[in-house]
Image (tube, rainbow, N blue to C red; front, side, top):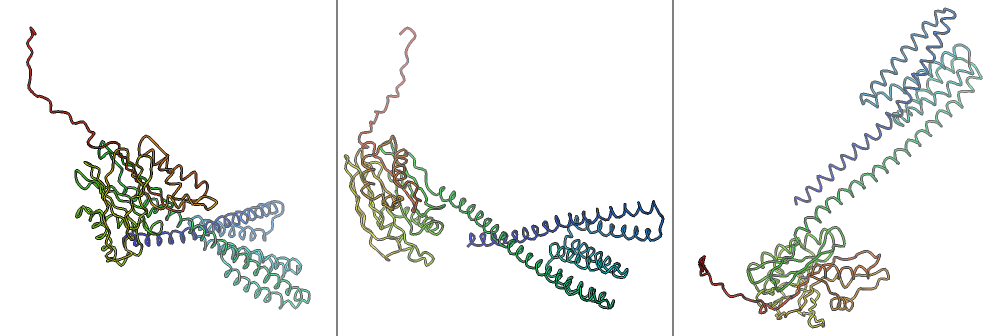
Length: 473
């Protein structure tokens, strides 16, 4: 429940973060475009201001003063809009600039129309499309559509009362051109918005995948900590163990439990499925086995109790195979029971035999009577407990590693210790698999009987009598 709540909170935080990134990305795009537009228009006004000052220097005319005041007020408006942009008020700055450019073009058209410069007025009517495009790019499509409607109404209002046939005939293509530009701007903005949405979805998916990978990496590290590090339990034996997950987390289980001074429990299991669900079942089963192992020394009883507990938990749907053995460190007697797990291999005197013990996987049949078997291990024996991921490994030709090839590797391969031996076994499996993907988890536990406990030399207790030797001796 806690993990689910944490994951939900992380997803909500990620969605909010993506929305903020999308808004910031759109605003940044508008801010860059506004900055270039603003600078361009301001520089044009500076040029016009310098030109008027030049004319005013040559010939004084009162109308130049009005032009200078007009240009200065325009520059002031543009500078104010740029200040708003720098303060982060991008939308307000965009609306001010687009409205200003539209009004500037409309006034120029109106002045030329009343000055009987009909051709110039019509030209500036077409130029109104520039302000529509700017509005679509820096504000939104809706604002540009409203602006187009206002411009068309303005053109009709100023051209029709002139009663000029050429001008009336010219406004129809102007209106059609403005509508066409508005439609193009709307389609462009719509395509751009969809592209941005696709980009944001891809970014969100990438961030979700990154978050999941980080969480799975944490889960993998936590799971690796659950696997005990093999230690030297006795001078007479060497134990090695390893898990190679096919995915980030594993459904395989191995455990080594020190039951008392004389006995250790060896557990190897495999939950159905892979990754997180199988790993959760594995962790829960491990905890139950550890608890039951302290209550009973009989492997069959332990598996029966674990099976009953798993059946009582409706939240568990997966089955799990488990091999459970108890090894006596003093006499090397091995008692074991099997819940549907592949039979371990015993290499003795160069031959391979299986330690057969039959049973169904945990949580498959309620109250199944798991039976205990016993075997006496001898010096130079090698016990190999493994999961089916070993023999079911497939290469690129979809051929199985197979049980026969596995028996051959156990019989032939040698190493200095069990740790190196596991590396040799895994290397043999990897060579067979080649470039094919690892399809299942691979777990190995190896017990090498170095010598019989009776071969240990017991030194006699030394005489602690103190002998004082004189100086003359």
